[in-house]
Image (tube, rainbow, N blue to C red; front, side, top):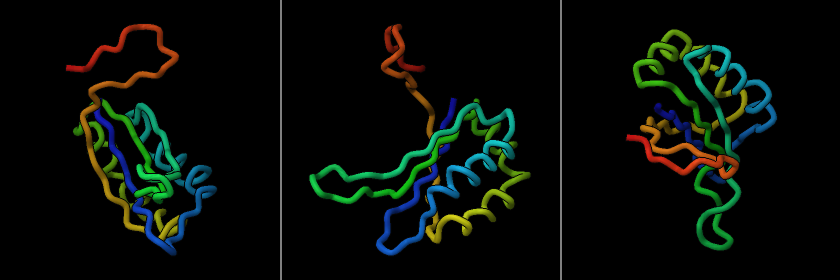
Length: 117
């Protein structure tokens, strides 16, 4: 499993419309990527690591796929529509990272944590 994370840097004066992002953009992304997208999550930055420090990112989105190839196959044909929607909620340029998911667990799971690999 891989995770595609989209990071929106927290820059003073930047525009970011969380209502549009969560009600319109992320559903558009999920629908356009179809069954290849195994899950989607979004975070709003609250604070940095030091007391009183601002969050380094105003928002982060996470999308899950079986493989990099599955992501590329799903994203390629719809990338223009997805990327074209970005100005509707922000004037920031996002950074993207693709990661290999080594562990994905919640505290509600009762089984022992088992690292991937």
